[in-house]
Length: 207
Image 1 (cartoon, rainbow, N blue to C red):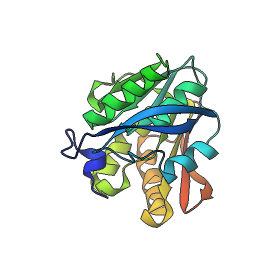
Image 2 (cartoon, helix red, strand yellow):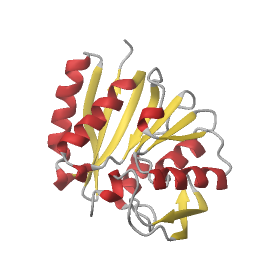
Image 3 (cartoon, one colour):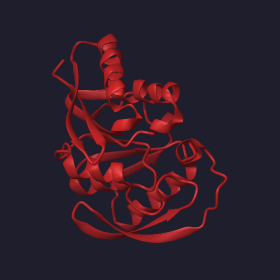
């Protein structure tokens, strides 16, 4: 799969739009997708594993989806935590347009779709969920996680889904090392494995 599907600001692939029926937060909904983004045919396997196994998000505060694509994670967060503010972040402008449109279609006015640099630096997140873009390479992936994981609020959790054979265990080791340099109030583990995917959890204790 080309990294363009994840990480091009302006994708060059066909923008042909399509409607897809999916289940989000126990609801059957119709969303709009297009070419040039990640998983345009529906919910990919990794995201499905994440959404099945993660605990409920925080009810309030700021929730984050890193690499929102057309929105399956961000929309689920918004449906499950209607009192919270959901930040849906992606560098791909086509993904952002689709995610915003899908939030509007579902009547979710608590979703803010932005590029990473548009998110105010002072925002701290009570929940982070992500199917991160593993195939962009370690340097870019590490930069991405260094940007967002340290912004967990106290007593908050981040959940990442990573394919086991694409370096999930080595990524967990790196995350632990990176966060240890940030502070001693972080813990990271891998509480779940399903269908070839690891679920990695990062928790920030009360500082």
